[in-house]
Image: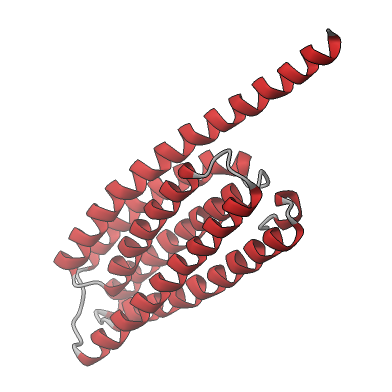
Length: 214
């Protein structure tokens, strides 16, 4: 009887954990969809590469969180495969940022720093909230660890876009916006490598605890 109680208690604990994970992922998914729409609109109005990069990153993150939500409670192998796909999304975001930088170099313009600054502040606030919600689960498994990695990138991205707004205001030029966009490109590439490495490690060892992203 005691053994059954312990087993049932473990099952309830796992189900409760998965329910909490799903709630968190739903919240961060909605936040990223809202900030994506806001950032893309502000990027168009402000003529900002860094804002557009951030907006596309938020869209990629929304897809990432949707995938994470879909595999909560799935096998380690399934989570690792989805994590590989998340890494591919981050890599795609990096390629889009690179293409945007090239386009802006060919079509120079001075962005509107007011639009960049307001949008960046709103985005940073949403990103900090997402990071806070995901932090307790960063060591749970490769699924939640990769979601946390995306959220941490978003915080750095938000700070970088604020720096772009300040640079555009100080120098009255578009190059600070491009410099920040190039920095985001490097960040995305580094993050993609980290997620790929953690995913392959999880698939190789078959244990999410052995593939934490730190």
